[in-house]
Image 1 (cartoon, rainbow, N blue to C red):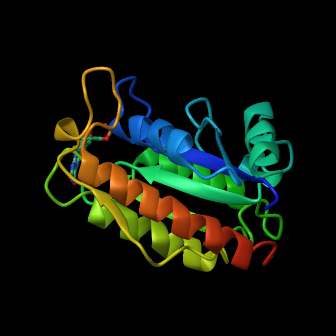
Image 2: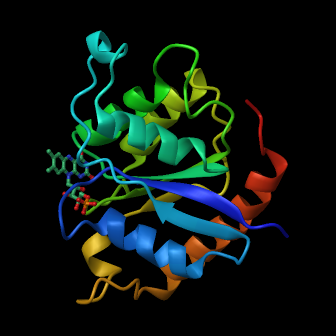
Length: 186
Ligand SMILES: Cc1cc2nc3c(=O)[nH]c(=O)nc-3n(C[C@H](O)[C@H](O)[C@H](O)COP(=O)(O)O)c2cc1C
């Protein structure tokens, strides 16, 4: 199977992010056909439509980095029952200028990792709401809500919980099929 490049977008900017840990774990667990590469969003200035005519260099770089990928994996924390500000900002920047969205038609998966007991369900689904208008086919099953994050990673940040590891592997196997089925839908 041809190798597909997958842009990994991590919605948390903090160093010890559980979402980043999960992204690293999934990059290691992913089948050969998926190459997961983090596209950083921390340096993106806030989206402002006035700048669309002459966009900041970091917006252009971000858009280009996503554009060359075959699919996208979002790893979102939950902030007040929604996705984080940086995640929404990145989605908005990628979606503009109008008619030139870099997300259009790219097969995607949404993973949420939370310190709370609900696994970031609210954030996961708010993010999916934006993907609908962006014409992004987001994999419906299996869902990936990882709860009580502090209990599933070890001190080195490795995914240590066997059940969570199995869920991550199952998610990735399904995502591999999802990407193949939904390539170039834009
Ligand atoms: C501003 C803010 C709001 C939060 N709101 C929620 C929430 O609504 N639901 C939840 O499960 N956790 C919430 N948390 C806790 C996060 O789940 C926790 O900080 C988690 O570690 C964030 O992901 P990260 O480790 O990738 O940074 C909130 C944290 C912050 C800083």
